[in-house]
Image (cartoon, rainbow, N blue to C red; front, side, top):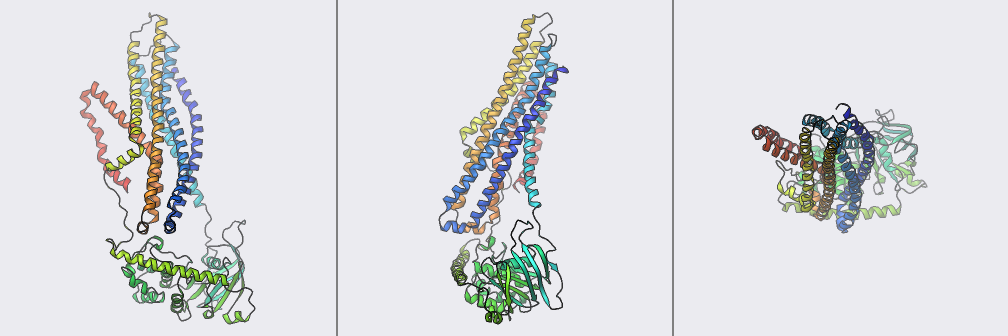
Length: 640
């Protein structure tokens, strides 16, 4: 019997290269699927960020089609992976049976004296069954390793991205000339790659402590880039950058927290009533607070979706003012407000008599109304400082380039007018929250189900799979279990019949009996694998069809929701639903269902057999149900 195992072991060794080849293909498909998934999530993120425009122009169906096109390509990769996984699982499920067949065949056919008895057969079968579990789960383990490897490479790529140079900006004290900021012979680009173009060239700039500097120039000239240099966000090619003191930055596109207005302004600092009131007055926020449902305790939606552009910009400016920094980098903060509000902010906050009068201020602007009040004007063109000096001095010169072109002035006026209209609409939207039942909480806490999964969840998934397909899958897996049981039953009968075989038995009839036994055993084993492969493939295909239906329904229902839903629900929460949750439905659900069906049907058949032949052991089997006590804890963990 010892030598008879050799053909089976050789067969297992031959299957390993075949499986590695399959897994290499699966790895390529997984990488492709990840890229398509990223593309779909990116598209969803863009759509959710621009949901107002999308609904304004009634583009919902057009974008649903675009998202579904990417989704179909993603499902195609998952479908190909599912077929390969089903085939790989079938091969490895058949491997123990094939080892049994080859071992038994080698044993009984090698000599007429070799009789396959029940003792030899079932002891061998018990040993072979030790191989069954590792071989069955081997494809799943390899698949998990492949997915982990793909994810690891993606994380590695992200972590190996270029980092901001901590020494790009030198933190110094104010020099002997009283300069708080100094750039000498500086050239900068956005990354360290020599292939990227140089954005700023030969920058020489000295800014006296407490001065107000206006930076002007045409669109794309490099005004914002100069502020980025001082923040240390650009790669330094040559030169030196010295900055003295702390920095507060007001970006061109305002950034706000999903929190109350007050929390946005304080930004973690201790509340100072006097300073807070001064900041609110300087940023012209008091009239806005008066019309809001809960004044400064009004909650702001994600990315300030329920505020106008002007309101967001003023909140961003107020946060900077409250920080009491030494240096203020202001990237065109007045472009989003109308003329009289801009004049108020400049006078009360930014200007020579404002709240920041003792601070160093760099003001990027397209407006010309306040230039004469600045200590110095820096003119930027094509990444270079082409002129600088006081307003009167520059006006008396023959300008190399106008600070702001007529076209830009026109664009600025149109932008302010458009934002003013938007501000009126948004204010009306905010005040309408007073009539809502949950007016005190704009962003509602996500509802998390606890305890057992509700029946409606199972029914929804079954309906998506369709009842006929679910029934067909159940029948196929039942046939798989019956085939597995039949191989053991036949082996038992075959070995019992072999007991009656003696040396004197006719050699021809003995050989026929052995061949007949092996043939039936092989057919039953083949049927088991055939049913398992068919059941797994049909389950994977049905699961993917269900996933497609559920995603389409999710997408359609999402785009039909009113704007108030998107104001009350963070985008990240929606993205999680269409990425993480659907990834589980796409990939994990099919494997979980297959394991559940196999385990359940296997348990039922074993229980019936034991109850039939050894009914006295039934009380002992109660121990099996002890793990169900810990199931509730696991459910809560999964839900969270």
